[in-house]
Length: 317
Image 1 (tube, rainbow, N blue to C red):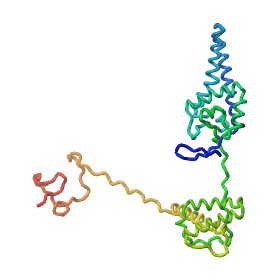
Image 2: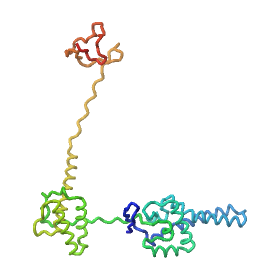
Image 3: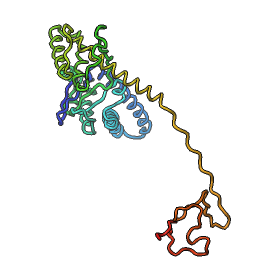
Image 4: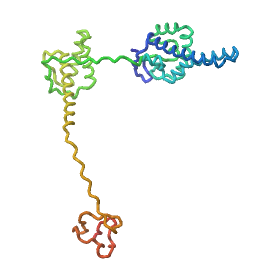
């Protein structure tokens, strides 16, 4: 693990690639580049049969520069540091601050690679990578880049050891709401690694964590219980509470009553002929005096009702 500090004072944990993986990635890239170079050379040689020797030499130099040097530069620029060989080996070129490379980084790496890889058959690059603490060759040093490993084997999670059987459920009434997540994490890390620690150092760490846990909960453990067993029992109690909470939520969700069925749609209103498309009300209509079924002001008498409201409300008397 290599600790790189960015301009924002952020520590980056990166795994630099070492010489074996870098050599394999470089071999794959060189094999692909030389195959492309030979194929293009054959095509150009066939097309330039009628040219003189000077033109053929100029074309050969141009092919060397474009394919063997310009090709890797273009690939690393467009793929942000992932060439075919690096992609196969799980590697990537990044800046010293962990960011993706740009054209100028790829240009410096490609120019230096022509000297330390192509012209010296990789001897200079191998020596520089072995001497460097982070496995960098001269092109990486001048360009300010680093080749890192992107695919890292996932570590198997270690379970917290269970407490002694006579301590299971003994702290069921303990209030754990005031214990912060940082303390839980520290206790878990100690319990998963306590067998790797020196007995004296491990005992002092367990005592300090137990004292802090007692301060947060306000209840001291019973006499004669080791600090490590006390921590394991409290963590087991928290895990049991979380499991009961999850199972209770799932049971409540499964036993929730079904949603009531949607009410039936109301019947379509009846349209009477000559009503200009307005539907007649289904029930009795209340007039302004509150009596249902009575004559409405201005209707049924041949009058429109001078004070009638356009919204259908009766005017005040």
